[in-house]
Image (cartoon, rainbow, N blue to C red; front, side):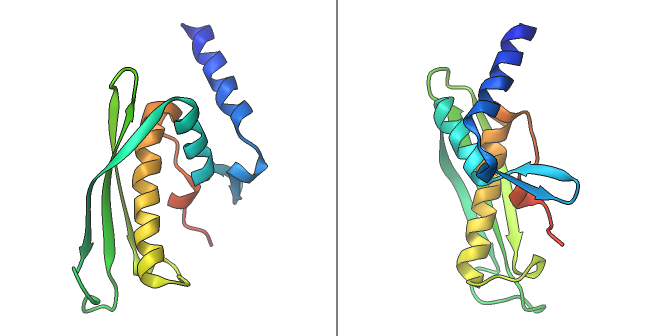
Length: 132
């Protein structure tokens, strides 16, 4: 079993290239492209379970809003599945396209987490790390 996991880890590394990793500080983090490659290679699909915006329209009293997403990833052959949740706030960074970028970031976080639980062992993705 140990050798099978070692081969699986080697397989995952071989699928990626330098564009799939982002250096933040002293540590390298996997980007969205890495999680998508692994999902494809491992026959993992996903579906949106829930999305919601708080507040539903406009901005809150502090001038912000938050998107929340829940995504289910599942291994097609076995039916094994994982739920990933993610959120993003207008207040956490500067965005070029506020509404779209906050929504897309929250969705990416949820999807990355769901895929990570199935194939990556729970690693934090680059999209989750605050860049200073």
